[in-house]
Amino acid sequence: MYRRFFIVLILIGLFLGGVFGYHVLASKEQDDVASSEDIPSSQKGEITGILRASHGVDLTTESAGLIKTIEFTSGGDVKKGEIIVTLTAEPEIAKLTSLQATAELAQITYARDKEQFSIQGVSRADLDADLAELKSKKADVLEQEAIVAQKVIRAPFDGHLGISAVNLGQYLDAGDKIVTLQALDPIYVDFYLPQTLFAHIRTHQTVYFKTNTYPNLEFEGKITCVNAKFNPATQKVQVEAILNNPNHKLFPGMSGTINLKEISK
Image 1 (cartoon, rainbow, N blue to C red):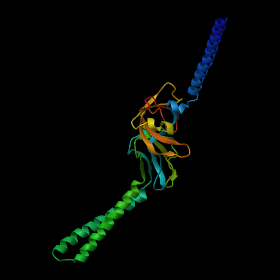
Image 2 (cartoon, rainbow, N blue to C red; image 1 turned 180 degrees about the vertical axis):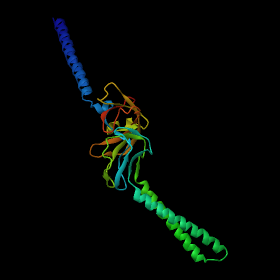
Image 3 (cartoon, one colour; image 1 turned 135 degrees about the vertical axis):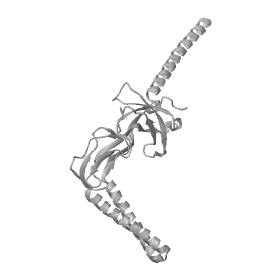
Image 4 (cartoon, one colour; image 1 turned 45 degrees about the horizontal axis):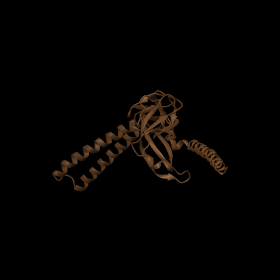
């Protein structure tokens, strides 16, 4: 009888142990699933990025004047040095011509007095005065040449133009916007990483950019710079990467997702 009672106790113990073990295992699996779902997307290597031109400016003029010619087309591409707009410059050119003539006369006077000085026909003081006058007149010419050059607005770098903000014959004040110029290839993307991922990135690391504008395309790039400090409010650091953009599909200001597929361990 005692033997049967002992066997029954053992069987009950095994049954209860099995039930307890099942619940422990099930609870562990649920915790693992919850833990995986709770991992933020930034920990999985995906971060929002904003595109930025490698060079981008609103072209303006340093000198006021009437627009004489418009040499660009809205939405077109230009090369560095190409003329964008010319302003009327007849008065400035006329003054330049006058200053050039004055400088030429000063050059002749200095050359003549230099010969006279060699035979003691003029004093050293006179020759020095002639030289000072010549330098002054040449400086006036250079200054006026710079003023005339400001009447021609050129592209400072290769890039893609936006929508024109001017019309032929319009009067421009210094600083008025003419058109936006953006260098699109290559193009930068800025994104922010949490402190927990800081140890996993490095310069020249490969990144991949995707945008809902082109859901089936992925743009490859390289990390070029990591900022020298974290934002104390967000505890995130700014990272800059560069992307090839030969077909100009990507534009500054567009947003997308950065994927660090080759995340460093």
